[in-house]
Image 1: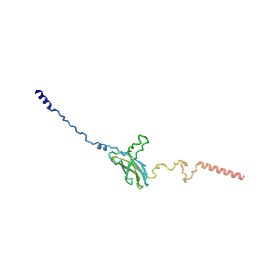
Image 2: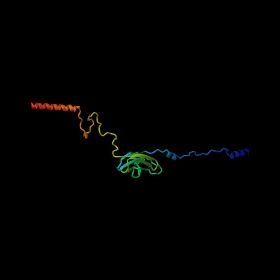
Image 3: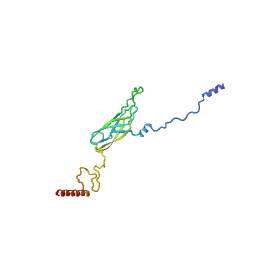
Image 4: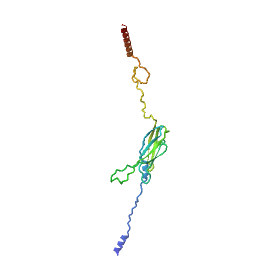
Length: 208
């Protein structure tokens, strides 16, 4: 009996120790909020990046918009005070895979670029205009600068149109269209006297 009671008591005894620590959550910031706060601007390219004032021009916008995940469309929008209207940027088609057994049936991966064409009015004044781009699927942004210049903007400034004149009465650098006559210096006087003397000598010989 004593053995049975002792066994029964041991079996019915409950452990006195129990875990007291419970897992707690220590993260207080969300990864999405941190990523959006430190997101770098995307690369935006213009072709051409300079147009002539007074002419209606076309400009291509190319933006490095990441490919979104989870359903949003891979598109972007571009706007500028130089454009007639906003521009929708559509995905750039992926490169065609080479004809090989390994890639013949593979689906080309999307290219993280979008593009579109904008119209610049001929009434836009000369100056620098910011082109703002936003990726609709990922909310990335970027910008580029479009220059509107005059038609003769490519001509270098400060270049003289006439060669410099030499001092001392010389004719170095004299333009063909100048009406000024050649100055008579000492050499011209000597030549004139020599010609006059020769003429007198000829007249004397004829009289003789």
